[in-house]
Amino acid sequence: MRARRRLEGRLEPRARRWIERRERITPHEYRGYLSAVEIGLGVDMRMRDRWWEGDLRAIAREAAALGYSSIWTPAADKRVPFDMCATWHEASGLETGIAVAPMSAWTPDRLLSVSKDTFERCGGEFTLGIGTGRLTGAPIRVMREAISIFRGSLPRLRVYLGALGPQMLRLAGERYDGAALNWCTAEHVTWCRERIAAGARAAGRDSADVRIHEYIRVCVDHDAEAARVALAKAVLGYALAMPGADKTKGYRGHFARMGFDEALSELESRRDSGATEDDLARLFPAALLRRVGYAGPPNGARDAFMRLADGLDIAIVRVVASRQNDLTTVRATMAACAPRA
Image 1 (cartoon, helix red, strand yellow):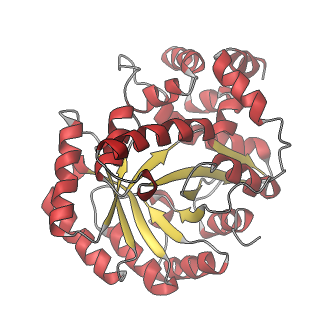
Image 2 (cartoon, one colour):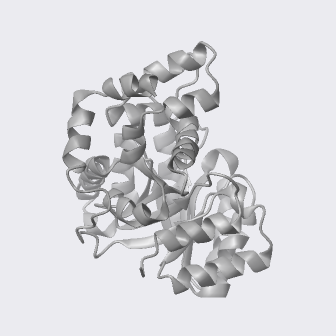
Image 3 (cartoon, helix red, strand yellow):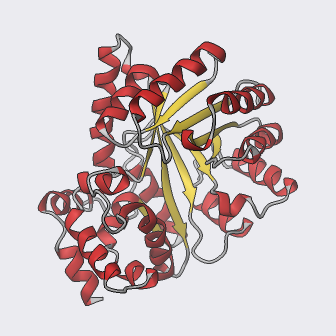
């Protein structure tokens, strides 16, 4: 506990001031500033791969009854997530989406084919999110070419760009229907929106036509410490740089832009000295976790989620399991964050 407090004490002043300012709002007080945001449900691959088709249909119907507007899941290199989107829509009538499919794992023709089929099965209520994945060479050019292919072959399909850095955000504003964000503070959403708007203006577009979408991780458990550790583990694979990697790139650079470089460097040093994932999760600064997700009992989830969704057009409750990736976990999280409380 003392080590974690030391880490939290090393947060950059900019980040610490922002946290203090935001936390003047009491933890469970919702001030009603999200009347226009759409709230969707996000299910990750580890959960969905355990389900039968009947489970998929049941979750979709329950999500619709609770007031969710859409259901989303990521895609790796298989078409299974696309078929799931079609099943969800057929069961509930909800919009569905992929956020995101990595271009490093798909050829444009193959991704176009499966997206066209899913779009038709969903009656047009389907959105495709695409990102660079593991591409390292000329990623901006690749994503410019990708949207040109989709625009030319399937113009009615909504396509969002998975974007972290300023150049990709600007490209989303220039060419795409939306930007799919990830692991953002509410303050950083404003930063992203400004860069998206600049891209839209440069292309002669109305920035209001570019939707801003984000997964917000929520881990619900009456054991608050178990929830906190689970959320920390979810962050670890994104926020920490591999030994020798450029800390200005990718998610490591993304978290650094939000003011956590010093705390993450300390965690990386501990990892390189032999600390385990469990050790690092227990040490992960609680202040950082509160800025990018929620971990704790059900009664605090909805208000925390809504504060983090400030400035978004589409906010997705991305379920994080503290114990088991099962239907019970999804149902508990859906209920805790339900738009129709």
